[in-house]
Length: 435
Image (cartoon, rainbow, N blue to C red; front, side, top):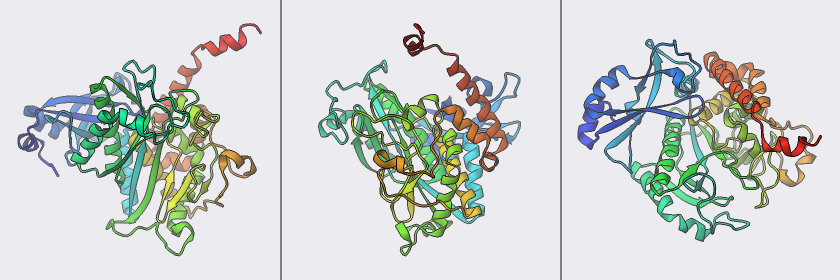
């Protein structure tokens, strides 16, 4: 792994480095640094004004310095003289507690102190749109059930294959690409990894998909629900926990139901227990709740949960256990912050381990057809405000993610909700004008 970025530049033909951090709203912020200046930046960090990004700061705050993590450097496959370096945010020599990558690293360290190593994989769905973002880019992609549509997939071969070739070159071990359940929607999968590595890859993947789409005259979006009537963009997260050696799966027990050990069930119990508060992080926008509380789509199913339930290999629940030693959390959507997703999963899961949380009974029913028969499982929040209130009421989760982060996140997200409520919409005129 690279430790000296100046030497890395010389050895790999790098002219510029993108020192990048992800703010609380998931926006990626970067400074483009010439290779000749990278030594100073690696030592001192790249300077930013935190207030100018989505961090809970004022113009009076001191400089924010993004300290590049040289061990996580990624050379841009589509622009090979540029390297992307994720960074940790510092201010006056101290880590910024509200910075998402800092939050995640603290949770990874907490898991390590318990002798555990969390590994995850994500399924980041996206749409390919026209350059102006107003419509699906492929006018022929109009099937009622477009999932796995062979012709539609191949009409976007140039884009999808370029992204997949890039992941192959980066050593991510991608293993499948498909057209998803909505017209114009795609999913690309790569091998799972340690939580921090997955978050860095997820962050870079979003940047890469958008960049390569733009190169082809298209626009990619991870927006949770860009079109009424179509399936939204999920970001399902597969979770397993291992011993520190990385070879022994602590979740696996061949003799247990679903192959999930007691530790796995306790971890899952934490996810179930904190689910309503979890949604404030995993479903972070106003639009998110158009996906998890959507009516049936044109394809026949939303593929998103609306109730806190778990199951075996059944995609209609919030959590499914598709195989021994792991589970899939189907709640997160495309707007989720890559670092906060991993952080909140670890925080909720470790809480469950500490308290030996019972995930409750599993259900084998089709939740889309028979969900009304489940009487004791809570519904997920109906909107962002409900989710924020659930998070504010969850002292354990707020403490686990850090008070500095929690206060900052809630301040900015309540501001986002207030901004949304201040908007006047055509719906209001259509339903209220003649009252």
